Image (cartoon, rainbow, N blue to C red; front, side):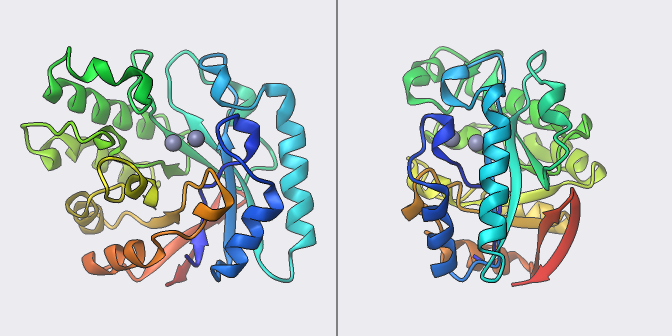
Length: 260
Ligand SMILES: [Zn+2]
Ligand SMILES: [Zn+2]
């Protein structure tokens, strides 16, 4: 991947490997712009993320690596931030050194729907309602205008509990909001590693995004160094198949376009 902006570090307690190992892996994969976007701290679900006190060491470690590898690759500093009403913190939303913030929805009313521990909850609710609530939350996230990139747009499909209603219909308002907020959509390969076995977003949603001229970027969403650049060909082909020829990276929270 020429641009790869969504990657984790062991600070989130569920990823492994050293920052330099991720970078070595990215260099091997011919990445030109490689971003770390570890899970930002919040006072909810603290077990799976760094603490507020660890933010400065995270930023310093990434910035030191940026300097060290500057002749080989450009390292960017980001955070993956949970959009969760009542739990978003100013210390995260206004990080001075951040090149970008990824906004992600991992919780619906406090339910961690992508965590296999809580998979049982899919059975006790109306599947169409779950999906609609998910996309309504994505719309709210875009409307908040707090973030640059939409993380894994259709994450709700992770365990393959598919809705009966039309997904494009359900996602329509959220896509419009993403366009209006001038956000970028990431093509995230983590879905290939999950039961759904396809990228986020699906080809049909990506096609809608293309029609709306929503820009894209690429994401390994690596939680191990060896996951960097996996499924590179699949994701590039997916982007090309709907018509994209350019992707985005961010510096200082400003978009830059590059051909891929
Ligand atoms: Zn993670
Ligand atoms: Zn995520």
